[in-house]
Image (cartoon, rainbow, N blue to C red; front, side, top):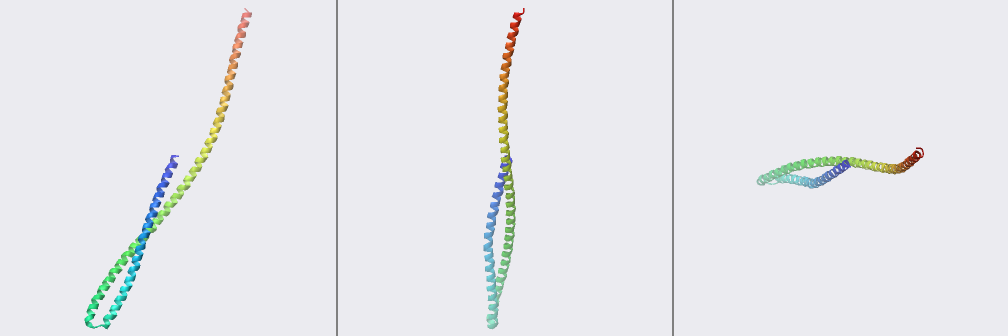
Length: 185
């Protein structure tokens, strides 16, 4: 019974850990959504900046030499900004990859915990069946014991009656013996 309680406690602990892992998995999934959106935004911005850069380069070719210097500076700023965005995109992609790996690890742990819980539930079910069987056997033994006690009581009662009869016979025999002695002096 104590082992059953221990397994029940272990089952509750595993269920608690499983629920915690589910919550962590949900949190990681929620964290992944903004990262995916950020990635898409960065790609869009990168494309727009690339278009701006190309447009600026075409404009530079068509404009005069005095504007050429200003546009060259603007292109450098845009390229610098584009490189920064690409670096940030790369960083966010790494974070996303780590979050996905972590999510997969949590899913694996969750599956392992679920398997442990299933095993424990099966063991618990088997132990319950064993307890039922032992209880049934115990009831049968009690019934046999009660029958044996009733038989013993009956035998003891009969033995007491026989002892009383034996005592009375001894007394009668003693009285007869005394009477015979008095008759034959």
